[in-house]
Image 1 (spheres, one colour):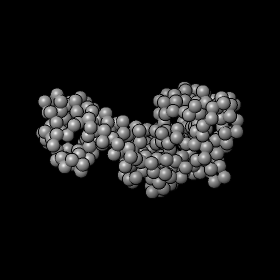
Image 2 (image 1 turned 30 degrees about the vertical axis):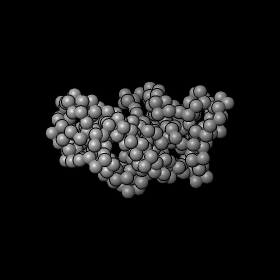
Image 3 (image 1 turned 45 degrees about the vertical axis):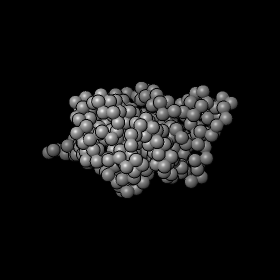
Image 4 (image 1 turned 135 degrees about the vertical axis):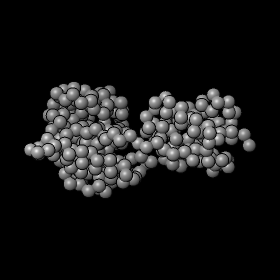
Amino acid sequence: MNIEKEVALQQFISYIQLEKNYSALTTAAYEQDIQEFFQFIAAEGLRNLQEVEYVHARLYVTQLYNAQKARATISRKISSIRSFFRFLNKEFDLDDSSFQALYHPKKEGRLPRFFYEEELMQLFEANEGETPKAIRDLAILELLYATGIRVSELTSIELKDVDFSLSIIRVMGKGRKERYVPFGQFAHEALQLYIDLARPRLMKNKNHSFFFVNMKGDAVTARGIRYILNEMVKKTPLSSTIYPHMIRHTFATHLLNNGADLRTVQELLGHTSLSSTQVYTHVTKEHLRKTYMNAHPRA
């Protein structure tokens, strides 16, 4: 049976959207990875998916290495295509052994970047203000640091998701997995001020339930959050660049530095695997080592 590549891809996309509940961003990444693989097999003269063998899979990965793609990127592309062929095996009885036999490249040993507590204090203090924009921006920063949520999770928060009486927020994470994350007094005050004073003025007669809005009154986007954070860091003497996930790294690192256990941090971050959280123990060990080397007279 000849399997049409584009038809098979669209069926696979529907499968991961509807049955696996993958996010729009994840789905788009899968589709792009598979389309790039289609271009590769076409260049190799393969007419259909049944002709793909292990040698082609190995050659494709070799080309990715030759193009100096990051190991994490290569690993993701392998996962995307492997999942696609597994789907084809299930739906069309296509042999999927070519990619199942591939090994993922070892991850690079880079540790996640984070802010030290004194750096974060500079960021908070430099961005205090009384305008609706300043109140909103500080509320965003406070909530990101208080909860460690992903920027995609922050942009999807609605008014009903924030419980001020319990200081807890409902978050819809990856794979549509719901979790509840507490937030502290600083975030509570910043969010309350935003809801009472800033959001009504920013809405500009718009009518929707999204919690954070941009200067036009529409729901804030992930790109908007990145822009806000970059503008905030410019007001400080910090030379570091900033990105939303850096606040998430900071949240996890500070919790572990101050005695939180790994399982609790895993649950707060919404990680399905403890191994995803364990990278932060390496960060805290490195922090301890640097502190020791700087402070001990005979280090």
